[in-house]
Image (cartoon, rainbow, N blue to C red; front, side, top):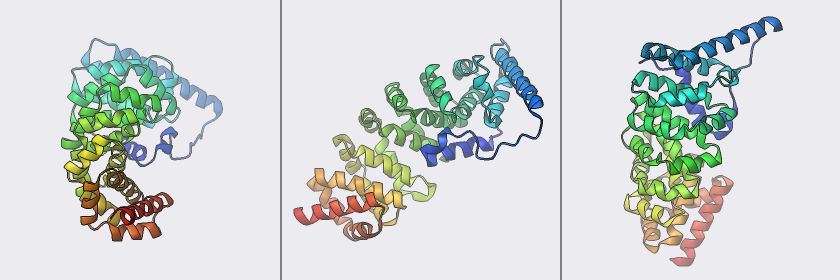
Length: 327
């Protein structure tokens, strides 16, 4: 299926811009133009249709499964009332099972339906409870480019719930996410960097992310800012800079020039995270501190200490104070 659902990608971008929107199911007002009785009939018809599609998911016919997953994908995208989940007919667990389908179109439809369903917070829990994480990793490793993107976006969506961050990290998702960051499509890279950033919030995942080789690709992202992924990459590096392995990797992979540049030219949030990363690097390594100074970090840090966000000002002032007291 080559047609891309435009709402799928706009859904992803909403997920990536802020966690707070993930609980919303619609950005437009709900319009009910028919009487309540008719509305109930319509909803009953929708539920009946969902139940029929769920039966089709269990068909022995690949064509029938393909048609059913395609329609559920669209219903999950468009259905503000979350009827696929509320029908209580096992749709989520069956879609999870089909993530292992050898038919790439069925697999792609199933993962996209789950992505669209995962925007609802209740569904996040239901999808994770259906043991979806390992099958999602399977899609990340074996799917079409679009299926890989949507699997990464679904893992991000599920990782908004704290316990899921730990399980996703332990289950082996990090390495294929790093592979997607290194060699995926532009959208795939965006989905991967967002998922890795969210996973890096969990302390137990930080070493796994470093060991999987993520720092090299995160540094590449911040040195080539055209893709619009710099803020998330810098934020991930700031999280990884809180552990020794992360700091070593940032230094070895040439991350310091990119972080200094982010302090000077980044967005307000990017400057804040870059300053936090540099503070970790400098206060834990004299060699890295010298490298930061050689990159000309002082003028942009002075400017940031005067005009950044409150947290950015705090980090910049702490770093400048450290320079004064130790050099």
